[in-house]
Length: 250
Ligand SMILES: Nc1ncnc2c1ncn2[C@@H]1O[C@H](COP(=O)(O)OP(=O)(O)O)[C@@H](O)[C@H]1O
Ligand SMILES: [Mg+2]
Image (cartoon, rainbow, N blue to C red; front, side, top):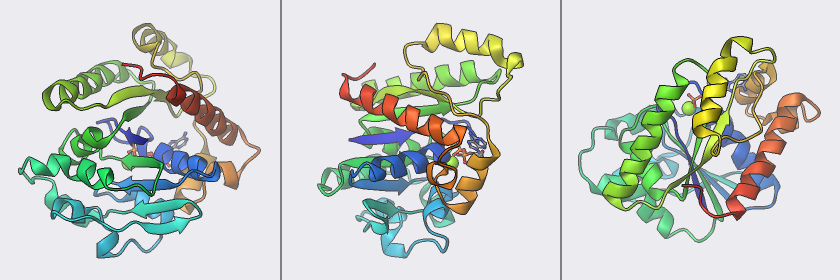
């Protein structure tokens, strides 16, 4: 099963959630492949401090080849990225769109693939969504959230109709929630009105421990396993796996 993290807005927690999900699935004994399709390479930095070799780089996909995953932890492999990937951003060849899907179609080793994408609906995000079974959308509760999410879901729908993509929206995860977020209550209520069916009940609290965890490359479930953010990620993981067992949501 392949899950692409997507949101054209930056800083909403795509990479953070990709990192935690990959670790949670691996911790559950699943064979996980994490794929960084963002030239910022943030997910790669979470797993490896010194970057990846050219053969383990996502750029290989857009050169017409297949990258080799590198083992970064037990049950967890990575195909990484850095700024080199941005050279392929304007790659107009349409086969670029299918590069990820074609490659993963040949992979029988991993039962769970987590794809991290950049904050734009460009080639990398589209190729990830075309390869994915599910899109998972982290979002913040801001004034922009409503419009942004509507655009994103419309883009995913368009991919489904234009390219007969099978991707469906698994759900929306509200991230960076402050304990007393009264200011955003209205937005939240509106989100619930429009997307209630897709919203995960679990929200991820805003926490310095999450930031530390990402910068140290240690999931918060290990860095501070008794804390609130760790409990939230574990609850969210449970909700996600339960939803995965049901039929696609859209
Ligand atoms: N729940 C959270 N609490 C505190 N900081 C967070 C949380 N989620 C993400 N962050 C921080 O916010 C920044 C952006 O998150 P990131 O996952 O990189 O977003 P994206 O991949 O969508 O651009 C990072 O510095 C990350 O550590
Ligand atoms: Mg990111």
